[in-house]
Length: 330
Image (cartoon, rainbow, N blue to C red):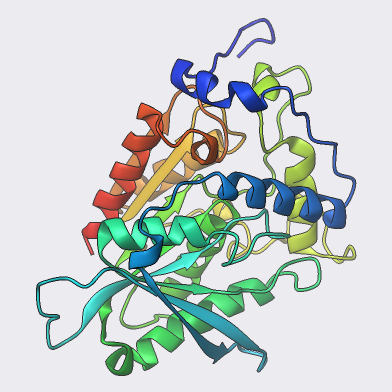
């Protein structure tokens, strides 16, 4: 795309964000400033996010241990009671990995999002409080996610879930973790295999960067600079690895994996004005090449995490409905 080409926002989305369009966040300089900025923005938009199902979804706090013995919280979200009786072998469930660029976010800040999907799918969701970078760089967050998956399998009877019907859903950086978890589970022959992978504008490739004169820059909510800081924190913290290092693990940056065969059926979506759109598209193509069942949606005219400020927009409703439908296939 040449620098003189113009990109435009979806008209409904543009109207929805008009009250906030004048806000220009400061450019982060390091992981700490990016964390503060992300948490402020996530908490602010989530405070505006309607959540009518909140009183009908029950939350329980569990605990589990990661590979290094660190004890972590695992939040269980139970949907409104169904009139149908659970099958003797248990019910399907979803392991949900929140976003935040590897440096920020929490189960608490993404609680309304989890509640929405638990209520609309009528599935039980489990959300681990995985550790953040740079304090806990790769592989710690991935180990935390893997240990949560093991907990669900090993405690399936107590939790009344079917270990053969566990799906993994990840948002942004959580989507990168989810893809890395699926690759690791495949290679380590984790059984039962993950049933479904749902990746929402996932953060997959540490090499992603666009030119300064690219027309996409005008609309980015997640920028080159934020991406660089997030990946640097995750891949090396104090500098043991650099961004785009050739030795970055495919489990950290799943876009680096050449062979995606054997992964679970995968749902992918991304906005057409998202920095991640090309890497997500390429990942989908690799999945198809590996003969993996893929459902891919590209939504024109919207940036990264667009839905948080556009709850009533047709493009948001369409995306949420598609995600719910994909999850119900569990």
